[in-house]
Image (cartoon, rainbow, N blue to C red; front, top):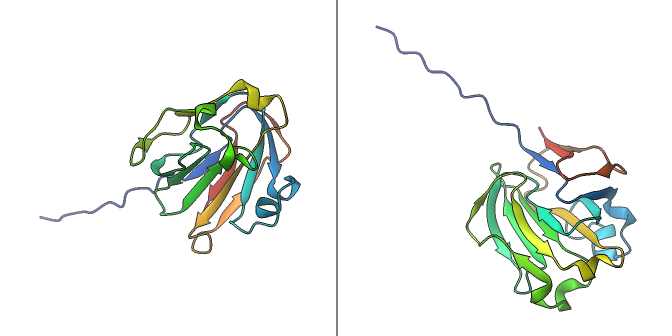
Length: 158
């Protein structure tokens, strides 16, 4: 009798656009914390909609007290941070209707936050940065400067 073991095919880990709008390079953001990549590499969206969706499958690892920032831990232990707006730490919590809780598993495309429409009156930048383990994984950015609906593949991990 022989026993055979089959290796499970690894599920590809990707990060997609998370709100309808334009995908841009972090360097285009008028905020040095993000544009100089002090917090990490990634990309940003210029929002055209008020529904922020999960860009990937993972676990909600962090929610800012004012609901303006959400952390997601991916299956490869990479941590990403989505920051709604620039200088938004002083924005009222009521401007962000949270749809998830810390520790909750989320799937790609699942609704995370509904953003108050008043915040969309000006250009609303929403950066996403890889903040933990960025040097332990290889990834590729694509589809920058593309405009469209959420769900466009932007980061692909090797």
